[in-house]
Amino acid sequence: KLCEGLVRVLERDGRACCRTACLETLRILSRDKRVLGPVATREGMLILAELAGLQEEGDRAVEIVDEQVVVEALKCLCNVVFNSVAAQQKSAEIRLAAGLCARLRTYTTQGLSHDVALFSLRLLFLLSALRTDVRACLRQELKAVDLLISVLEHTLGIKWVAEFEAESDPKSLPLPLEENERVMEALKALFNLTLSDTSEEDGAHQLRLITAIMRHLLMIKTQTEDKTEEAHSHAINLLSNIPVSCLDVLICVQSQGGLEEFNGKNMDAIEVLLDFMEKRIDKASNYKEGLTPVLSLLTESSRYHREIRKYIKAQVLPPLKDVKIRPEVGTTVRNKLVRLMTHVDTGVKQSAAEFLFVLCKESVDNLLKYTGYGNAAGLLAARGLLTGGRGDGQYSDDEDSDTEEYKSAKPFINPITGHVEEPMPNPIEEMTEEQKEYEAQKLVTMFDKLSRYSTVYLHLHNMCF
Image (cartoon, rainbow, N blue to C red; front, top):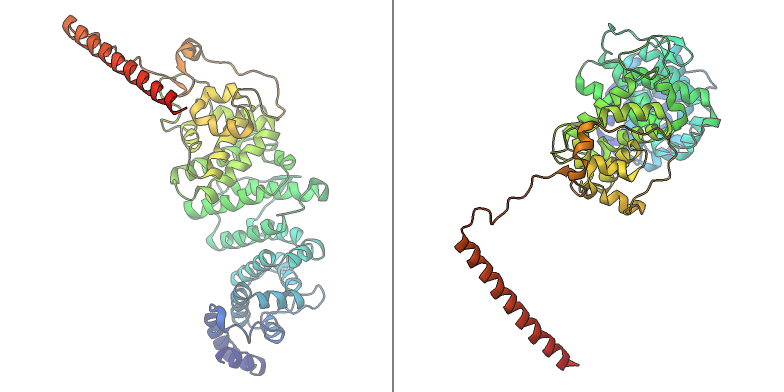
């Protein structure tokens, strides 16, 4: 009844202070799914949309009269849409997404306040996540992918120095907190819109432009380390939706060079991804959501792009020298990944094993050299490669050279554990002759008992038949 009364007041009373108070109350109530009936109607959603300035008027955005009312209405819409399936349906019917896109187009041309832009992007994310029909409309009719690209370019202050290369300034200030928040919401919405139907033929230029923006995002810092990691996480999730053939944009940066040059390619972004992966491994929690996306991205990039694979292998699986320690023991990235190959979570161990397998060009012999048979058995069994061979991937024919230390130790390496084991001490070396004779007599006695017991067992077994 309270929600119903608030909706009636919002419809009739035009005073800004009254509307703000009602909307603040409704925002708190809208967290409870059980009281949303009066709001999750066509009339209720139209009232909130009008107060938020999102009613559809062609491509033109409604002018914002009272910003506080608009912000509170947007917050209410976010809560109601998130908590009510009926509200989601009505949002699609009244074309709330069209009003949001019209509003966000003014963001890149005229500018919007932080709160209006932030909650508009958040509502767009919710609609794109919860309604597949709205998602399709955003992609095709409303051209929301191009719109969100423009939002990211504007928020990040990107200046293009080449077709797919943003200007990079190592001395630039960290991305401010408010800009970072808007970027996160835009990335989440863009992730939903690129979740399916992202073939390169649909728009290679658009997909490569997204990849270039994600590269720029990977190379900048925010106000805190946690916020930087969060930004990189969203960038990685979005890159996972991009066709792998477009990911060469990550390394084809010609104008400015970088700290990491490898075979003429700029590997700065790949180095950031590797650092991110290692940090997530070191956290030792939530591997499925936190680690597997970056592992999958690095695996597919390595499978398709030779330069990326060779660079990552040089960092993760450098030529072996010390083979006296088990592959899973130690603090190197290789040691950490090999430990994950026997993780209790099937998805995690498969991702880690597949990553190392691709770095080894899907060669069983190469993989066993770095992991040992025991750690790799799960992957090899799943692939039907327990007896050796290669996977189905196509790789260059260049061979990896072994170090002299590895060549000299290779005959003594235990293939199961993947390392040179210390020789076991001979138990009879320090025994006296009397002790040796005593142990030999015990062994004879045990053989005698075993022989007699086996004969009795066989006799009884034959009698049963």
